[in-house]
Every structure is written in C-alpha cells, then in structure tokens.
Image (cartoon, rainbow, N blue to C red; front, side, top):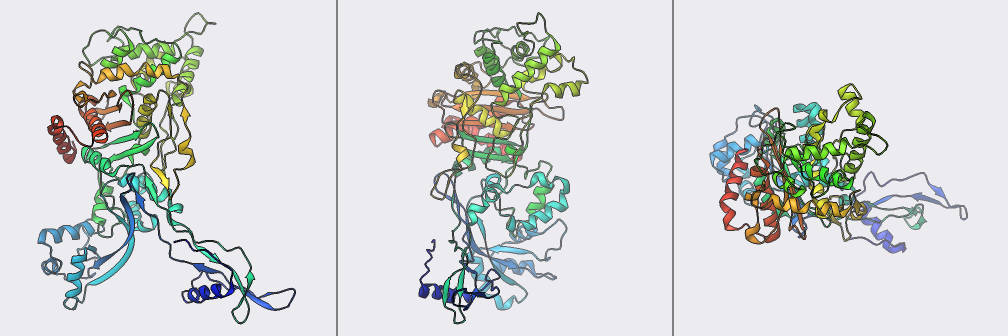
Length: 608
C-alpha cells in the first residue's frame, strides 16, 4: 500500500514518533540550522518510511504466481558429529533413504562431513514435529528466513535469482569453474528488473525545533513505492511441458508469439529446478550442476551461438529473391559434385521443391548466384565483385537481427556471428578467395553462428512476412505494459512478397515426401510451416535443428528447437517443435502422438 505524505504537523509528529522507535542508519541528525528571520535553531532529520520493502511477485501470462517472497524455516544440524541420522529421520518422518539424500544434497561440496553446517528446509508438518520434540534435540537449531519462493520447478533460465540470495552459489561457482563462471551466471528477470521488483524507500526531511515540533522541510520528501509485479509472457504449463521434452539433453527450445514477440516457452537444456540456485539445502545439487560436462547452468538460447544448418536456407533464399539472384521458379540440378545431398529426391524444379527436399546442391547454386553475381559494369567475376556481393548479402541478413543482440530482457545475450569480406581476407590470408572456399554459408554452416533467440525470431519474421517485435519475457510491469522498445515494430530489408514465396516450400516440408512429413499435424487440422536442419559436427553426433510456425496461414506460435548431438533434425528436433505447437494451439496432444510423446520424454530423462 502506497503511503501519501502530508505536512500537517500533528500527523507528521505521530509518524515520526513511530519511526523514531525503529531508527536506522538512514535516519541522520545534522548540524543545527538557524532560521534567518527568528534566529531559532532547528535540527535536520532524515526519516525512512517503510524501511522493509516488499519485493514484487513474478507471474506467468495467465497470472499464475511463479515467484513470491515467503518465510520458511530451516533446521541447522550441529557442526560436529556424532549425528544419529536414524533418529533424525524418525524426528522428521523421513525414511533412511530420504535422510541420506537430503543431507547429500545440502553438502557444500563432495566429501564434506555430513554434519558440516548443513541446513534443511522444513515443511509445516516437519516444523511441528521438531518443535514438539525440541527438548530431546538440544543440538539442533531452528532458523527462520524470508526469501524468494518458487511455486514451480519450471523456468529456471528465465526466472533467475536475486544476487543477494545466491552468494553461496557464487562462492561455489568461483571455486569450481573460475574462468567459466561468468558464462554460467544468469540472474534472469530477477536481476534484469531488480530495480522495479525492489521498489524504493520513502524519506521525510523535517526541520525540528528543540521540542520536536516541525518547521517545514529542508529537502523534498519522497514517496515509498512497493516493488512492482512482473507479468511474464511465459505460459507456465507450456513451459513445463517443453521442459519435459528437453529433459537432460543439451539444447534449447524457444517458442514465441510472432504477432507480439512474446516468448511463450524458453527452455535451456539440461533443465533443472528453478529453486536450486538459492535453496539453502541444495548446495550438493549445485555442485553437480557446476561440474556437469553438459553445463546445464549455461543459458543456451541467449548465450550459445551455433551453426544453424539447413534452416538458414530460408534466409539465403529470401535474400537471393530480393537481389534477383533467383526467382520462385528457378530450377537447379542436384549436382553432388558441388556438395553432397543426403536426401534422395526428384530434381528440384523450383524453390518450393528445393525447400521441401532440403537439396544442398540447390542452395549451393542459390548462394553461388548471390556471391558470384557480376555487376553490369564488369564482364566477369572479380575479387572486388565477390567482396561487394558478400558485404551486400551480409547487410540484408543482418536486418533479421542477426550478428547483433536482439535486446531480450535478460542480463546477457550473445550477438552470434556473420562473416565479413575482411574476415575471409584474414582467415584465407588472401583477398583472392573464391566462392568455393566459402560455400558452407549456403547450407548454414562454416562461420555462421546464431543463438536460439535469433533462430526463433527468424521463424517469426518469415511468419510475419518480414517484420518482428523484439523477443521479450515481460509483457506487463505493475499495471502497465512492457518496456517501450518491445512495442516498436522492426522490419527487414526483404519485401513481403519474397517471404510469401518461402511459405509453400515450408508447408511442403511437413507434407508427404518432405523432410519432416512424419511430424505433420494435418490430422488435427493444423497446417505447419517448417524447415529441418542437420548440422555436421566434427566432434560427435550431428546436431538436430528445426524452425517453424503454425497455423501456416495465420501464425500464432513460432518455434525453434536445437538438440546438440541429437542427430537428424527431422527425427529429433521437429517432433518436439510440433508437439509444443499442438499443446499451445489445442491444449492437449492427440492420441495418435501419445506413444511418440512418451518416447521423447523417456529419451529426455536419459539425456539421449
């Protein structure tokens, strides 16, 4: 409740009398001030109003509370043994397995002694049992804390944590990861919107005489403001569902509403419980997360940029259409002497069939037409022409928000990378490089790197035929809307007609004979537009990628999925994406795909 201040003497004196009793360092007395007219001396006072601020809540798009400030109790175990764990279990109503697990999870590092200052959170029932038998346990101590409480295990990468509550984690991270710690730190919206969540103190600045009566103020009073609630764009049910599909696998899934840029689901895998970072009894779990080879604490959608693979053919095709390097009816032979094509298919006689079959030689020649175009003033391909054409390609591609941060409302975001002519001059140690030395750009590999947010936004741009709102996680602050920059429509340099030319091919991808025909949602009346990608990986299994949106004619959700070492995009990434689409658009999964869904979730649990 916001407090209205008045300068009426009696009311102010009553307020001062109450607040003086809880004086803090913020309440200061200065050198007496003399009134120039009467010569009377007054004392300056600075009084804090409501010196304990109430932090705002975090809610999902349907107003389900995800994070709130609540009080809880912890049981502090004695620092020195012996500790009768069997008797402790009987006290708390735990079996022996639960006792060992809870203590192991609370240990600050592997090998620590079980009674080394461990703190265990208690439920209300457990608290009652401890209080009832406290006389028999003089070495146990009950403590009360007020801290951020998470009502769901989902959304850890989005919600983040208060830095003041994560000091134990920071200390662990510095010890375990040292130089890598910076990459693993992610305060989420708790950190990004900290000032708005926290609110601000109110201050009174009265001038008081020797009898404590007020004579005006010596500075302007400020109003106490309670922390504002954050209303997220996330649907917590969709988020939890998407996290089940990702599980312990490395990768990401980002789903957003292309009409607004609102992020509906934001998954970074492997997933973990949102409360882990700040919970006093999860130090052991944090140690495992920090040490895990798959780096679950890395915020993959925002911070990890990867080669996009064949999904990038959509961008190259749009640029080629814009610059006149191809038309929608351009045909290219599947010439595998140029680049291998893993799909056996008929000749791609148009852009639509080139996308449907994801023909690598087709898009090799699309990009070749772009880079090796000869200006009217020249009669042959030259070094200068190649440099100019690559620079022009990059300018159009950057208008998709690539090679730069999109400005999502998270503390840190990577820009990705698009190569420049100067980059190749340095990398090839010559200006005389040819298209043959950079052709991997045609299939979204080589030097191109995009983040998960950029991949999802790329799908949204195509769904919108060329425009987008920057992806964001907060749709409302207090009673207002999102930050102003998230309401500004941004446009690419590509005409809408050229994006429209991509849609038939993306729809064909999901139809019979397309690379992702097994993931069609036609049986429930939803037409999906998509593109698969299988990203070559020299250090292990290939990465699986997919981008798409639905319904194709009136898009309401755009999804990007990337599974590291997942194999084929068609068999690994596409099923996850379409299930999230179906879940969002229909609320449930059709019986036809239940077995499929169960198989994916089982693989997610195992991490494969």
